[in-house]
Length: 132
Image (cartoon, rainbow, N blue to C red; front, side, top):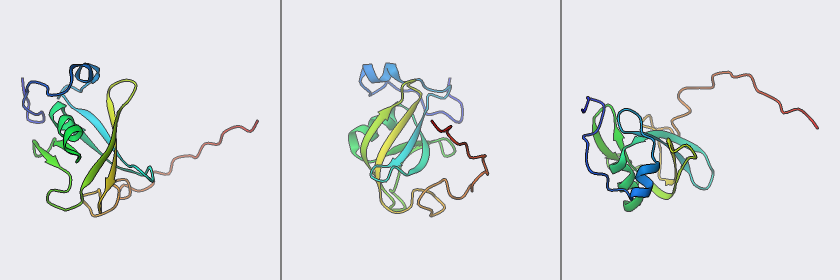
């Protein structure tokens, strides 16, 4: 069954070993944290299904599934702010990806380098590690 927020089902184009390790949400998606490869700055979070991950792994540019537009989009195709893949990692639980990229221009649709500036600092209490 396919609801309005999910990509249409299809046969996975991922290697069986990788496909079996992915823990997708109810919509068949996994979170993809995008990080600048050399500075380690976190740029954004997007969503991928098997096809978006396959495209990312094989085309050298990052592809996401847009939950709002219900379509695939390759970062930078309209803005010119491309993300060139340097590495892709699966976390230990299989429910999140880390995509290391070389970002050209802004990662955020607001024009900011990272999507984590517009939301502002939430004022968290800063913890301190005990000495000794």
